[in-house]
Image (cartoon, rainbow over all chains, first blue to last red; front, side, top):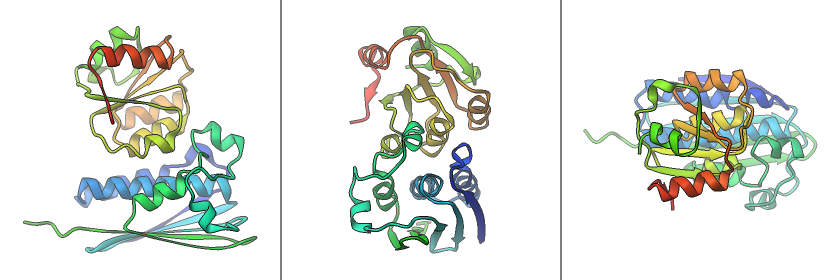
Length: 141
Length: 114
């Protein structure tokens, strides 16, 4: 199963819509609750990052029997220093992002904590790609 | 403790999903920082917050939080109520401070997540 959604930079009212629809799909597919909760939290933080920092973004979700792979590809200023961006507490968020309850420098670390693998590649001045993979445990019985 | 009992302790006003006030809650987390809420793994937890916007409801949706208490009579928008209804969340407003609400609920037996 594969689908994609567009996200507009700055569209705070709709941040989380993609995670919400993925949550419903994972429930329909009867994916383990602990796994699906981690996936939607990582994706939601990713969406908030796109809305907060990028001009536009695309979320691609691929689900097969062994894993859920999410790719967030965004056009934006990019990340100069990924290692620094990963540090909890480091943030370049605007006051507007903070007013929404985010921007405390926890987004990327929350995404990492809630995924089995996270890869970030970024080109300053062009944009950032984040790939999140969560494995689906084989159901015992 | 039931949501109904909680409402009476904090002089709460229910904005939606009043039919779910007989459900009970075991834990509470108080924060205005949604990324912090997203780190909590407990189930059966309510959120006490001063942040009243769409992301409060979205965060609760992702965290499976079914009840939110808004401190200090924050304005609850129609868009928030509609999303909360869709997710079967009870939204409660209280005139009291976050500190007072947390203190009273802790005293009454609601547990902290850590």
